[in-house]
Amino acid sequence: MAEDPLAQSELAALTRRFEENAQTTDREFGIVKSDLTALRLQVGNLDQKVDRLGEKLDGFITEQRRVNATLVELLSSLAGKNPNAS
Image (cartoon, rainbow, N blue to C red; front, side, top):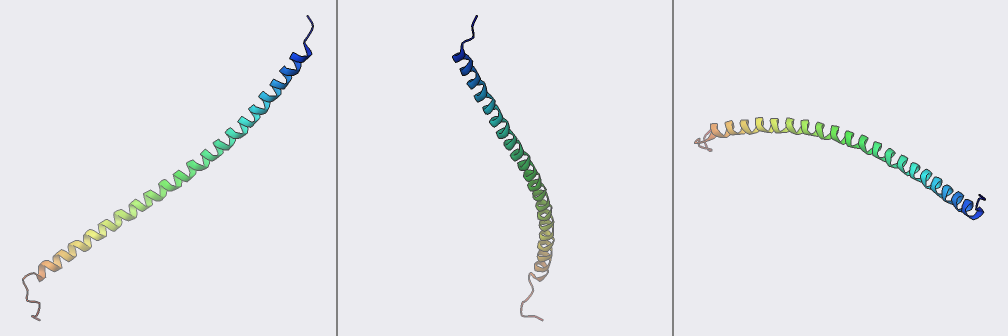
């Protein structure tokens, strides 16, 4: 059985295109994988920042409650007193 040169040429061209596409796909996958790794790091950093901000906010709220309680005590002690009295 004789080989068909045209079929062999077409097969070689298809093989080349497949290999080129495979290389392109591998490169693009590598880029996407690298970007995903960078994104994961950024999300991790943001998560840490959010945690620290939450802690600061909790501290602020606690301090604000203390200030509010002090103001209530001061205002309560002044209630009913004559503001012109010394």
